[in-house]
Image (cartoon, one colour):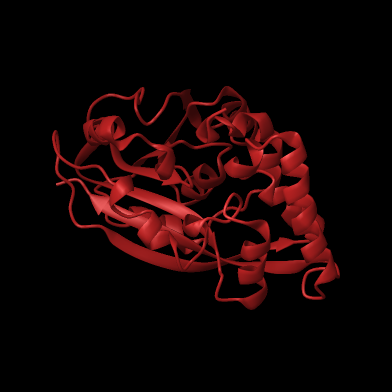
Length: 252
């Protein structure tokens, strides 16, 4: 199974355990958009959609996976939610002022998705990707990344690596529209977890979901032993230090 197609197998767990986004991050992502019409592309279970709705924006969500879309519609029944993908967006030309993607833009085939995004964006519209990343400047978080391995915590998943890992390969280029220079910002964030609930969160990572069952258990057991044996994480609730990173470009 392709990693980007793996999330539907854990849609309910994704909805329960994945974090939302730092409150200031979605606001910054769309701050320079010419209007309130926003497309949440690759919306998953609606984690980012909910934050955009809370800003009073006119939001439509597009998600390719039916199980993820079901969770989104259950959580946000008032939101217009459509089956579709970044490569085939079911919206008219110039119909949105911003396209945002929460922990999703790296899955897009930008050779196809770039022209599609440009098509649905109004002139001057904004494209923004948001990623929740671990604060590996914190000692135990950096150690967690080493214990978990790259299949769980890759360069894109840490505050020290996300900019480089989500730069040019995840931006559209060429016709039919040009985009301006990328802008970056990071916003402090955190998620209250226990050792077991953090294991459950990491179990929803794509690299974990596609592992054979035996290998998946081994990885998660290794993480569980690390978390439960460390006094900073093994004694009830703690805050997982995070950042929400935002990459933003404007359609010219």
